[in-house]
Length: 82
Image 1 (tube, rainbow, N blue to C red):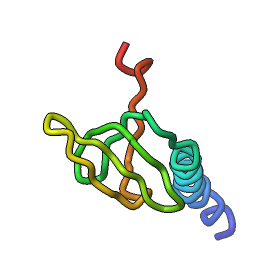
Image 2 (cartoon, rainbow, N blue to C red):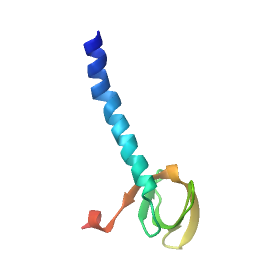
Image 3 (cartoon, rainbow, N blue to C red):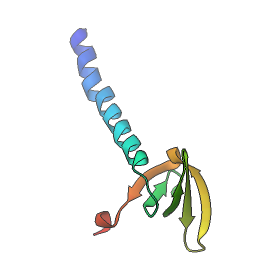
């Protein structure tokens, strides 16, 4: 029984914790000028980062939208496009 719990931990819980830590580190490193994608699928450029809020400029009309940091799902860098 103990071996099954250990296997369950290493197969499901540990990878999720690692993924959560990486996502939190990405949010902590967020800065002005970063290209981001939100959980809703909107893509834009970060204009300003506050405590728990990010202001993002969305093309083509250059709309400025305010998002909670946790709504950012990915940061897209120029190196990733190359």
